[in-house]
Image (cartoon, rainbow, N blue to C red):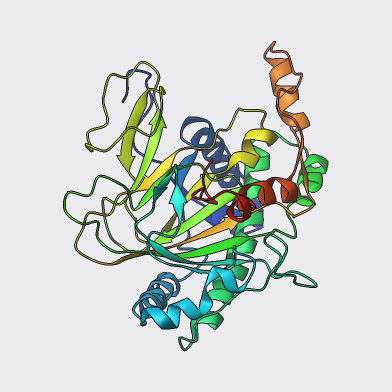
Length: 353
């Protein structure tokens, strides 16, 4: 335990109770909802056990297909270049993405929710570019559909953890039921010896929920846990990326049957700061080629994200001023303000905060 009495180990939460309507599972659902609430308050990160939802072989197949794509000749991958579309959908070369002003040592393929009347001159409004690797598109589209359903399941569980009424949940659900999802397929070669940077620099996710599947590579994904008063320094020998915040970087190694889940900045607005998005980064110093597949379950493009009445109610019950401190956000506008930086600011990454 830390000096603040909090664990430095991410919790593992089983979503199985929310995949059934059996009345006998009501207590288990309540326990899962409470665990999600605690994880979001204390960590902003947790493991989600999906063994009751997807077969482990499905995720492993995604990794195999990703490695097959990244092993293609550079000229083949470049045929899917971001510049062919809206500079958001497509393939980015090694070191092409930038975080915090520094090139990230990874390559990636970005996919977004298909839109009506695509227009590649508009940010995020182009068309997805799919590899010709046999089976790639089919397997990934199946995963997308499963993650969209999972997003709604986890959102409902979180609404219970926050003490929302059924009517309040229905209203929140209407803001995420046509998720403007994003999926990245990312390849990480080993960092060269003595490299003073990152495979992916420290950042916070700006959306709703991230479901990350990664191959079994250990000691790559790192999460910053805010621990006020701690004196434990960052022992990685890397440049500080957490500013003046006190805390510790931990490894969030893959666990079989689980995805790593974290909350994005939209949850900060919904909860008026009760839940906070957490810094994380990738430092891959192993000898293998690592792949990861993060799925970002986001609000609807036109969703108005604003502090929830349930949070204000909890504050009032605790004698705290319930007046919201966060301003409402239209998610699509917020997204374009982030991704749109690719169009105007040289050297600024779309995932920079």
